[in-house]
Length: 270
Image (cartoon, rainbow, N blue to C red; front, side, top):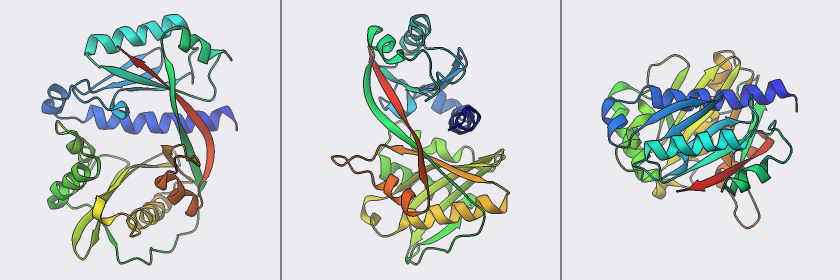
């Protein structure tokens, strides 16, 4: 896979996550401590009051910089200063030098897991889901419903369930609410830029899982991405393995996605 394409995929994710953080309210910046910092061209997100790695991680490591001991020490100093208990460095497949994993190990990092970056080319509209689930573009008076679904689906504390609607109405953003018998059961967002559509956060309340909610949300987003002129849809999930099957990954494969690459994540704990 060409470097320029990988770069687009990695920067697309970093851009939409940065948007979440940059649009955070003062309360969210103070309570969970939402913060972003650029270190050597990499995106460092932190929420020290919430010990969840998706909020405490480094994006684009190895994309335009070199993995060195000095760089890793800068990361450790930063996350220690903001008060995170631990953080994860997600390393782009373009990373150098070739022995970057040994450098990380020598600095106290351990390989935690891999994330799968997947994509599909889009062109023709896709058929709507045949389930009884309906998908709506989020209306202003439904923002609380959206936030409540995030809370029930992920159980994130300290008001973090509210951060994903703070990009509502911003350029390039789409927000969705899925319903079953008029009850909100699922949510999703999409970020579009430079011919790429990121299928960003998506979640379903426990009682509604396995009923086609995410399939309906995927198809709705693909059709909207086509309407605004995007060529590719891209998504990140956990790695699907025989001993740890990942439903979200399988959902994407059923909708025509293919895996671009696996991205390793390295953990550091204070």
